Length: 385
Ligand code: NAD
Ligand code: MG
Image (tube, rainbow, N blue to C red):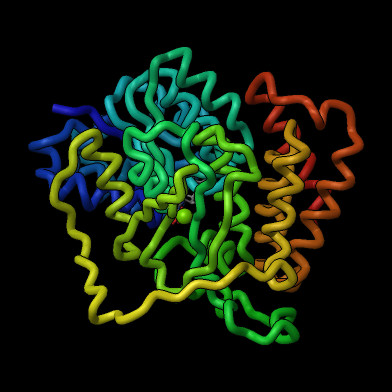
């Protein structure tokens, strides 16, 4: 029996992970070590009971007694708060899904890496904020990191056993999000509800809004650089409204290998769960004849300034990724909270980067988690509306 844990089990990716475990036989087939969540105690408790987890943890200390009540009569232990999250993530497991949203996922993900095993990484923020730390932790413990972000899983699969040295470049696709075809002059008035719809993917609200602003793709370009160790000049973005091709790996001999699939996260999560094998997954087959055509266009950096910022972040290195992510998270909070407009997010992130880039230590790679979280806090403070 494989021991598994899901960090952020109650979220969009996490719940898809739970669904796959359930379909694979649930508690009879896997030993669930830890499931973690946030404020949705009923959902967390229901999942933990069903999978007979050792422990369920909410991120919020004030919800501990609610969680205890929801788990009463079961064998599942209850815990709450950031240190309980770390303790749960540190428990020995063979496969851990890192699917907390935001840089809040960094410390639990590192704790899971430190215990070895496989880390199926959906939390792209970890790599954007602290790529070198993540790789160092994996190297130290012998843990294996597998990509769960669909584009990165696609690159990983398209690469197969090919050597990165023969790769000319990789292309990740972007649907273009909610405002792909909006006239530019309407963007400033875009509402949170409008930004929270996605043409193809069903995802958590934050990543859906990040898709509309293209901050998600900007993060993914940095994620690809950190995950695969590719130079920034070898990572391209292509707008592809149908979201059927997820990534294309182009080789020096003129051959390109694309990864295709329905826009359903259960493919990428399931691929990481079954790796190095493949097994049937509840993902719809593609009917290309019915679709008839796939379309592509170059990304427009006037509409999506986040893509230019990603290149500046990669050129700057050091703490730029941590600052970029945290400033983006803060700007997103402020947009969701009604304090700033949709089009204010990118200028705020850019201003925060240029302000903090003058400070001591900005250009140094992080030596430890505390340093990264120090810059994360400074960026949130600087970017706040
Ligand atoms: P979500 O908002 O649906 O779920 C987030 C999970 O994290 C929930 O379980 C929530 O309780 C937990 N959480 C939130 N804040 C927390 C905190 N401060 N401390 C501890 N736990 C906290 O998010 P999602 O859409 O599932 O995305 C999760 C991660 O996966 C993100 O990093 C996202 O970029 C990445 N990702 C998501 C998708 C997708 O289809 N949703 C696709 C690719 C990558
Ligand atoms: Mg993605």
